[in-house]
Image 1 (cartoon, helix red, strand yellow):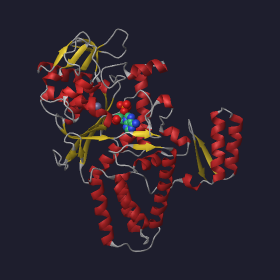
Image 2 (image 1 turned 60 degrees about the horizontal axis):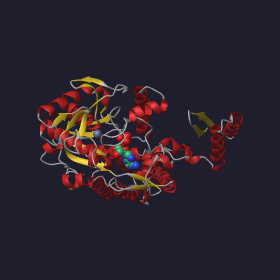
Image 3 (image 1 turned 90 degrees about the vertical axis):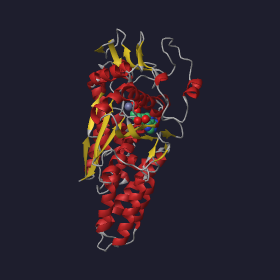
Image 4 (image 1 turned 180 degrees about the vertical axis):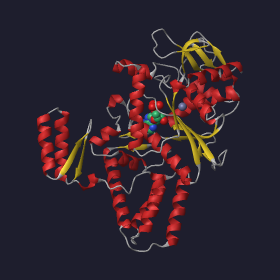
Length: 456
Ligand code: AMP
Ligand code: ZN
């Protein structure tokens, strides 16, 4: 696996052969997850499934950031949770609960194998306080009128992950405006809460809320111990969040907390950044409105290696949808086949598939092997079994027949007209279209934002 810490592909050797310990930086639950966020968790799923396929047991922890992630990844701007609380005029805990539920539902819809432990930052404040007390005791932090700050000049090396030295980093940084900070790159461990701040806790330094980075250090240590195997996140975590997690751990224990650091590249949309102002931050629901299922999107993600940028367009994801349908049809042809498979060929496919996934999770290459099996002119149940085995890693549910595939264009047109009527709150028209779909031999089940249409 490619290790951001060593800047090369390293052979994976777990600390404890019987159980691989992993920490994944989870979402900040202030809004719906967009398809870019979800790519990071599809990558997490691939990692989990690949390790399990290799026979490892896992202890995997993912946090839910429900406090402390400011608008910038460093210490600037408002807490994202409080911003959402103002936007929606709701209590931040209510916001967190709602978007956490939506996030878990997204993971389920993507058939993502979930971590063994999913923990909330606000449930672990005590652990964060004692972590910071240790850092202070070891002389790696100091107090200002604004909070407790980590003193990066005390470290022998910073940054550890980025291929830069601190002088270059400081030279490229904006002029820091906080005169109380000892070094421009010092970052907050706990921030003293202004009066109006809703989320705050009693600490030895007064009423405070935690910085984003300390959450992950405290929770990873609590559940996985001081040193564990793999730490994952998105590439945006490398320069600040993960550098600072490493700094904190070195301040508390003198060690780097994980042996392997893996990072997933970004999704772009129409070759540009995804952003609210451009109106291109799609959610799974947005895709479903256009008849793209969550697993179609997962299939689309498999068109690129996790360390490469992936450009999202509706044309590309439509292509993935067609490909997934072909895969399912190909699977069914093998399942219904009566011929005998060649055992040597099966072994060869298995070896090639394993080589691909074990080469830094090379899913595009693994998909190439899957297509070879699908296209094998000998139609055999043994090939269907092999495909199901590969699907333990892919999680595409290739054996589930998608009833939507069978919907004729006439019905799809009626569905789209009815969706439009529902969006326009034209209930009479919507009811008329529902009856028309039913009269043609289909059932229509309405969900909150959508409908499920199936052949009787
Ligand atoms: P957040 O909820 O903002 O903390 O982000 C959750 C995850 O989504 C993190 O792992 C980010 O690295 C990842 N992420 C954010 N934007 C994108 C994007 N456009 N493409 C891929 N991953 C992203
Ligand atoms: Zn984190």
